[in-house]
Length: 474
Image (cartoon, rainbow, N blue to C red; front, side, top):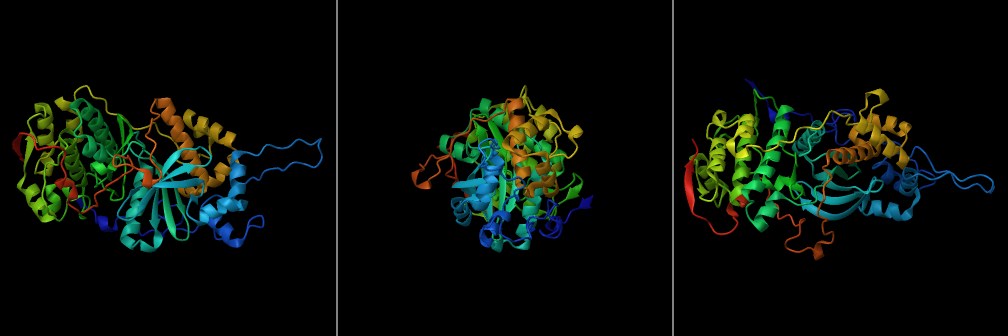
């Protein structure tokens, strides 16, 4: 058995060159000269957050016989980022970063805030996680490195996609796929438990997403209803990989992280634990919450919650079907090795005839320099990019910088849109309320998020407590 010191699994951010995914803070533009006469400070703002414009628009000739070359959307955007005073002011005020217009807040985290963004070229809505670099200690920097690395390794329709990483002098921006239907936690807290038919659909997608993570040796370590987002009424995405790590099945971890109401017993009593079993336990807690609207282990303090989880007794409402109760009990086993595996969960009677979405077909995360190695969807994406004015020479430059290139970010957004279209998974999302003053108590962006390492989740319930039956962790 190999032990992983997961507190030191990744080197600190900034320890390698910027093309390494673990480097979140490299200043990739050392040149601070003005562009096209732009004041030096405005140029630096633009260059720290987007590509240096490769092509410039051709202006009209004074000779009427000479045709005027059409300015592409990419060229126009590049000009605006360099010369348009309104755009430069938006950048200065934090209302724009790189190719993205920043709108209202859609969530907050322990170390960050999340805002809605609009990609200027594609008009795609994105979620922008914004972090203040001055408040990031080495531990938080390592967590960020893992978050970016984990998201780039995963290619599944039920997992939030990473598009781009943008850095300025003061802030770091992680640009991600936006799932506009709100949190699973918010939906169940407001509307109550899901009918079992709907619960099967949602839970099977959760299981498929976790299976893909584990197949790629990624442990999430913070699976909870607040980190499950609706893309549409019957399609969910797992997000927030801030506590994720890379660990093989035979390796143990030693860092307690995540939310106590979802924590497996071994996290409270053992120095080391197997990441796979901890994620599976969290799936059991999620299943219970989905079909009851309650948490199985509830207490007023973390100390009392710990005792409750270690004692292993919980009640299951009588309206939950026997097959579902059996699956819950088979997952929430005290001994990690006794818990159902992902394969056994998929074969359970309760999930009979359910579909488990598979991973996406292999594709190039960054624009490939070898045209012969791209698939049809990548080829279609390149045609769309070309229509926007992004040519092969732009893609070649972007390939060097990976997720830190605005061209690569645009490529990933366009490719993802093509993949969703071809798979029939284009989401009909709920448009969030941008002005928080106008949002109602039922707004999909009103997060009411619980902080990690707190017990607030397990004290919240939906509706009155129904007649129940007691189970013990075996």
